Amino acid sequence: MITPFRIDIPQADLDDLADRLARTRWPNEVAGAGWDYGFPLARLQELADHWRTGHDWREHEARLNRLPHFSTEIDGQNIHFIHVRSADPDALALVLTHGWPGSFLEFLDVIEPLSRDFHLVIPSIPGFGFSGPTHERGWDIVRVARAWAELMRRLGYRRYGAQGGDFGAGISTSLGAVAPGQVAGVHVNYLPTRPVAGVALSEADEARLDKVRQLIANRPAYQVLQATTPQTIGYALTDSPVGQLAWIAERFAAWTDPRSPISDDRMLTDVSLYWLTATAASSARLTRETPRGAAACPVPVGVAVLPHDITQSVRPLAERLYDIRHWSEFERGGHFAAMEVPELLAEDVRTFFLTTPGVHSRLPR
Image (tube, rainbow, N blue to C red):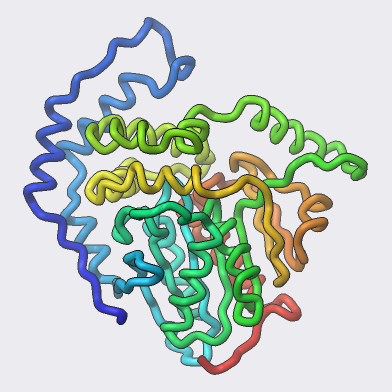
């Protein structure tokens, strides 16, 4: 059963958040630390103060409620999603999947341009946001992909495309693997490629691989903790709003192109979503549950490479794993493409699904 969903955070939860922010116990910081030891104290205090006194959740909640939200239960798990139908009844459907530490909020600025040509289904990954926490082992990206296939079946879509970045990219390619007869193509804006011996590469591609090698050798601390002890870090993030803020804001600062900044209010709405749904630990579990390494995807794939992303894909290596039909190199943008450069991403998605031979099929729902 699919039921309408409305966002309505209890006022007591908002009052509790403001009270906790006001009573934050701050650590000290060594003089001139900058970013050498982690998120700078002054900047975090600035964000926390704005969260408490300047960020109006009710304003953002009202704006979000103008969109058509729904929920359903699949595989024992609540699934929240937005469903926006195109004016064209024969339009191809797209399922858009966010990553961590993002949410369905990532896609707000691409809904209008993409819904001109596509029906849009924008779910919250189990364990994230309004889908709520998961309650059992095994919710990896493949299981999420199977849930998406069932969601699209329930909505009546016989043929559809998939798009995503971060975990959303892995879920999208996994969806192509679990439902190849239904998925017309997969577009991703994040596709890590690991070094492979014996493949001749250009100097530019070797430079990209050097960045990958550095990441492999120096795995980021947040990733290690989420991949090994998500429950432990979950206690701190679920009990301290400033802890949750620092955990997410550090990723936004590191992964966003300075030329395409995301506003503090947009980021704080995302942080608020994690806090108000108490999904810090369950969202972190996706890192623990999901195996490392690329999975096969038998359907056509389109790739958008952003210059300020965590890594940049190497096409000759990607083509060893995927049927690459479309490749774009953006001149600006970072990890949160739909938030940073929505106009560029929307146009690239449109180009891939509407003009790439063998991808777009205008079949009835």
